[in-house]
Length: 373
Length: 262
Ligand SMILES: Nc1ncnc2c1ncn2[C@@H]1O[C@H](COP(=O)(O)OP(=O)(O)OP(=O)(O)O)[C@@H](O)[C@H]1O
Ligand SMILES: [Mg+2]
Image 1 (spheres, rainbow over the protein chains, first blue to last red):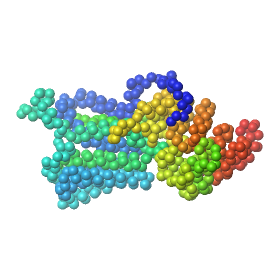
Image 2: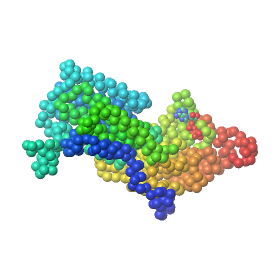
Image 3: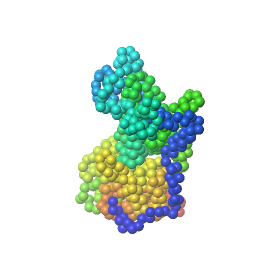
Image 4: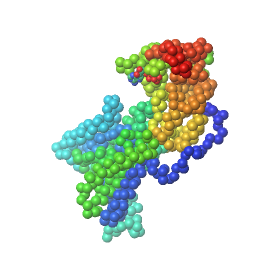
């Protein structure tokens, strides 16, 4: 573009009407601020009240594992929320994907790689169905996916009885994948050699017989970190990320500016369903079985983690790394309470309280930072 | 402008219904390279509906739509942008929660890197945004600030700068100066001239007859969803044009009442 080349010259790079943005203001502008603040608060709380064992390596792995399972869902939910839609079916999707994956392994007895592909195919189908129904009817995705919350849960129950011959549990996955070269990617602990060595040189705690107390990093934690980093990069640095913000901020304006809104939203619904499928694969291989209650109410926890992470319920604003921190807050409180003398059932009270605080906080921050009038 | 050329964009007998509402009822117009076509008419005459159809937002109910003499059907605004037709919409199509830069390049992001590592070139995007805004006469304090924090006129300038930057063949402006200050308005009119001189076709919608007469080569007047007529500049005077814009209503008496100020 060379229009008005004659005006090239020196374009001012500074403006006297611009207050120097301090690092502090820059930090305040970040949507994940709330989640980081929450994490700091919760950490301080447990440092003061909990048994110090909570913050040993074993303790950290202990609360990071449930955080990872929730967090993989929460990152998907966050992307979808930023794109302006909800998916209430992700919890049921975990159960449904577990059924599909388990059936493929135990009933059809296909190799692990094929079972994963079958599960992915079902996830793509469910994601596209959610997206198409939402966009073609113009109904809120909240309602459409609420229907699928029940449909998928029901299908899982019916399917489990069929696959297991009348029970609501399907077993035998561990045996089915034994020896598969892909299995270490989805189950067990990573870097066992490193941890054995660290134990030998005395960096980490060992049992009396010399084996390390923590044999490695559970793979789900690695998946969690990798997915959160990838999602953050996509959101902040890629064209597709710009399209997600645009589609969620104002779909009509985005479409008029050339953003393929329908394609973006369909992709996001599929990504969310794939996140649920990954959690299903990880937990099914971990437990060696699947049941109908898997992923129960996880859709709400994932959405709450995303909101704590700075996502607006109205779309167009939020952060994936925020959902990452939000999920860790969850894991810390869920497990941390067992290290204290506090009754575990306070967890639910905390959940609701955290959600309220986050929503109020997000609203204020958004008005402040984005200058909404 | 010679009429022996093929028009860049042409519509014939365009009809657009929204359910039972007939927004356009047989509109014909065209725009040639190197000319400014002013689209004039009362509120609700169908100007925005017409340009939304040209920009791919609406699909016409019936009628011919030709780009470079070839019949085209746009499946969405992305097709129109790919064909070199950029638009400043009356509602601006900006997203308040996103930064100036992200809005400027929305749908047309500059990329860098290879294969799966392709990413948005944020530095280049920031620089281009700042430069283009500076050319139009707005000093953006910080291209990363949210568009929601800009004034109405600044926001309009972002939309104009964006369309000018990306319009390769046809530039459509739907009341682009409605919120602009004196300096920015004359800047936009100067822009329209520059863009025309580069050989683009410009479709300019305005309610200000002086602005229209200052930059327009031809004037197409719409009234109640129909074309009232198309006039070249030498065939019509400014007074006559103003009367046509009002849908033929006699402005004279009102003008006298108000002391001749309109
Ligand atoms: N999406 C829609 N659904 C129903 N009717 C519509 C729609 N869009 C436009 N119309 C109707 O079509 C007519 C023409 O509207 P349009 O916006 O094109 O007018 P305009 O000439 O741009 O007016 P203005 O000068 O006020 O911008 C109006 O009567 C309007 O109510
Ligand atoms: Mg209009």
